[in-house]
Image 1: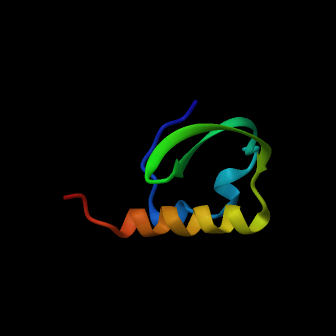
Image 2: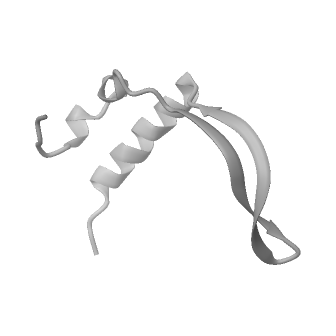
Image 3: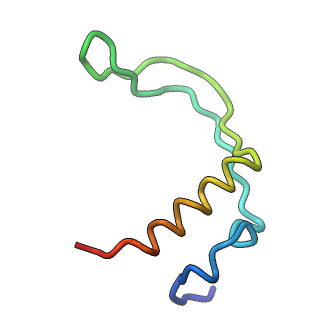
Length: 68
């Protein structure tokens, strides 16, 4: 395993190479009548190409944000 600083120039879709976002979801938090409850909801969560692009953008934005 290799650790290092994640700078904006290193952030690209290639960063997610080998990462598979696949998750079977069986329960979810949902707001019902103003209250948060856990509901039985089943689906498979797989990232699309668009979602990988969004994550890349979010990481770039985070790298440009100064810590408070």
